[in-house]
Image 1 (cartoon, each protein chain N blue to C red):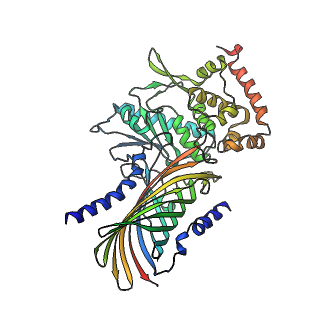
Image 2 (cartoon, rainbow over the protein chains, first blue to last red):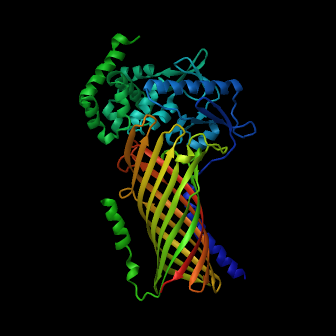
Image 3 (cartoon, rainbow over the protein chains, first blue to last red):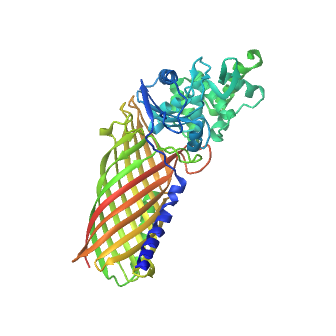
Length: 279
Length: 275
């Protein structure tokens, strides 16, 4: 009898051990302990008071988050001149919980196909260059959700991040000021790279992306250049073009060779950040 | 063309055991399936897949046609699984759908699978088998959002993997079986087509390349009755992987999406001996 039970245990173990391999690689957390608040097109999720990762959020902070996010939602849609009316789900995490879920990389992660983004709440508001006190970033992650959905999915990381940085108008850096902490502006950040002769050219950004402040900033300014030089409509049509067809499609859409555009871009940078515009 | 050739290669060239002679028994059958499909929200491959919400749910029913050829040395099992289109809904974590127009969101798929099994060893009354399993998976997922925006993914994945199986007779006519199969769907011969129709009605299409691992853990009981078998079982299917925007490659400048799905499936089957 004991021998038969041993057989059964061994048989089951022989199947369960290999089947568990997948679980070593993925750790799903789809728990249901959330407070859900909505306003306009924003559905905000944060942990309730009894949760071990509860956020120090006041009622007025929640109201501010909803108001700000709806403002950015409308601003992005209107600036890009596109139709978009779906809800966006925001999940706010305390730093220690977020570190487990996102490996601590970055402040937020957008997952456009699910109309959602996940954000690490830093515990205090930060002054955005547009004058708003933001608790969950500015427009950056909402730009990812809206653009990937409405424009057909990004073809290159350079334009995906470039759109987000350009429309948010801020750098990844924060600094202390007399009223607390503030984001530095995209222009301030780019001036630093321009002055240090660290400009990354568009072709380099498209083919050699890295998740550094330099890449984000340069991509943001390149996107601003595309908006101003070729118009929003043309930039929107370039957004889903993959990198292996980017140069050819750029020529077809604008009538300008990629190399000629890069020359124009250098002139644009000189005009915006050159010595005569250092103030 | 490459995909078609690959299907032919997998299902014709890699069936060495079919030449085994003699052929003592052939059976064929039909099963009815009920599936609970959960599609999670993963992150990029460079980040651990640790975010599950919102998740997408569907419960397709379907059927399977299968045939088993048993020779002295090996077993050959062919299975065609078809799931009928089922609605997809979303869950934000508290059971609410804030995203999808469920009436116009659907999932359906079909899988063609072959399993080649040989005896490994016997231990008491339990028999252990091992083998390999090529598979072709075709599926279509349509997600229509509340705004009317529609995303559609169509996958044709080809892969090959290993399988282990145990059979234990608890009664001369009643067997308890368990198996595990892990299949890797290969990027160079698998394809994903994406179509997006935004709120302005503009259609954007793109082609992608998946690299997906699929595991199937299965337990079932089988009762011999006259000329046939009646079976009832449970399968747990996991799929995880990445989908490359361009050609496959884990370069940091490539747009890469994660894929993470779990399914629980119940089925009942009836098969008859043909020979």
